[in-house]
Amino acid sequence: LSLQPPGTSPGHFEPPYVGRRPHQCAMASLSAFVLAPESSSIAVLGPPASAAAPAAAARAAASWSTGAGFSRASAAAAVGVVAVAASARGAARRRRVACRAIKEEQSVGRAGLFRGVSGAAVASASAGSAPLVLAPSAALAKSYEEAKTELLGFGVSNLIADKPPQNGWKVVVQAIGLAEDSDLARMKLGGERQVLYFHVPNLWIVTIPNLDFNGAAGTVQANDFGKGDSACLFVDVNFKGKLAEMTKMDFQDKIFKALTQKGKNFIELLKVTKVKEGDRPNTKIVEYEYEIESGAGFALNRNGVAAFTQVGKRGSLQIFWTGTTTPRWDYLKKDLEDIVQSFCMGNVPDSVEITLRKETKRQDELDYKADKSNYGGGESP
Image (cartoon, rainbow, N blue to C red):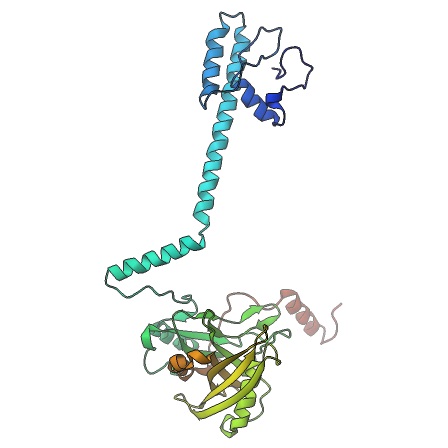
């Protein structure tokens, strides 16, 4: 069938069809066209009046064609094309509706997210239960009983605290040193198989080191980013002294080194104010204050407390330091002390085998080392 009006050249479209794609022209035309005699082309009668126009036009064409001198073949062809056009348009409409529904289901806006959280909190409060609290990931923050089980699996059950954490806090049990430190890592953990344990408030975000083919990078830390509260593990792998022999100035130097892992030009006026024995064996608790020079040019006063311990055959010094803004120090001091007093570390026994979730050694490097050993330590061919 031809889409041009009678008397026009092939490929010519009248203004109603200018700027439309061919399939759109066909749908618009066939939904409102009736057949002219077989010797002529399709004649334009006007645009469809409604969404039911394609079916109505098809029925009109079929009923009128017998008395208007059209062949049954032409009428059947027109009816078939009109039906196909209407079906295609309906299928396209259904696809658009389905895609829109999928997008709405997969995307959750900020307002919708907070509406869901606040709705759950209101429902919880109306039911007389405790208010809703968003806890860290279950894989990183555990209950007191779950921590007991995991420490037992690592062979360091003596690290568990004497009593559960306060206020329903969670427990972090994390193994480090399962792979050698990456050469590119800014924070190095020493490469010894160890486990650290500490308590964490429910809303703090816990992060752990990343392991890949380059080795381990990063450290264990917990943060309340919105309020500027933090707790972080720092390991001085080059420490050569003994914890019991450290002086107040030694503690200040190590705190400065821990705070300046990302740069040394913005920490000023660091001062250690108190050093005392910790609740855990072989642990020192150190209080300090300092200033941070912000990128905007003004200083931020901060206070913190840290736990020092020395665990491992290599003699590395482990520092678990915390910090908050000075205006929040009086309010948060007890919480930060509870965090560092709960901190402790232990060595994983050699008899305990730890399986990593992903491989950190390249197979081609292992094959290369095996070839060298097979050839008496020389280069493989």
